[in-house]
Length: 299
Image (cartoon, rainbow, N blue to C red; front, side, top):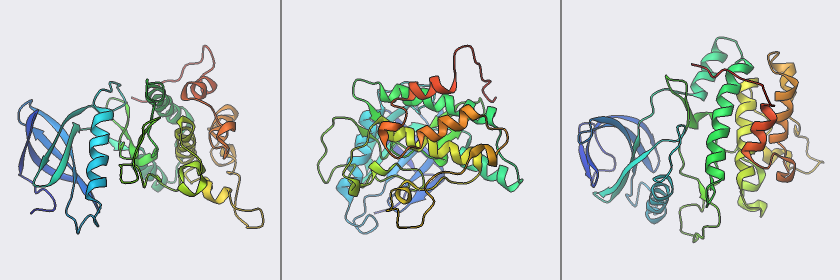
């Protein structure tokens, strides 16, 4: 059995035939490919969950469940900043998810290039991105069964050539009020430690909700404006006797393009206690954009 699909392979699902063009990314339990949809004459991204028992360390059921979970929840969604889902199928004991291929650069790639040039991103440009992500989160969080992304970070935000910011990689998402077993798709949904809120860790005993995405968004955009990460939430929760940095350094002292309003909004999003954060993406957006203020999106 092939552990991973090779370039040139043609895969067949219920909604199309797909010729793999190149490997885009690979991890310990799967890969992502760019492919040509031969049925609909378009380019797509194919996420492959490698279900080999050795390569996946005996977690086949969990990996398969996570991919099916992602397919079921994302397929009905329709938002300009969320990739569309086209197909899902099994082949040679692996699972495949076919979705819209997003051209562009991640915000992490843009930030890294900017830092190599010894510059910082300017506030108007970054706010244009932030407003788009808040709109996408408001759409997800206000659905009949709200969807929590749980892994917002610069690597999961792609700026397209037409100026859209796409929110990608929903592998750790949670649908509120959904019951999942211990072997279900979300047992290890910790996220990325540099951006994750404290309640996202199992040992915290707390549950995640829309405010968890607000924290991760605050950490992401603090990094984009400051060129450095804020203190990790797990460190900020340490006992006072342990010497760690607890409060993020002032954005305005690091980046002179940042306004007092924007700094205040980012810091409120980064509150350790969810009750002290913005309670919704819409509330955070209103704080950033008071009436009659307009921000140009970066095209």
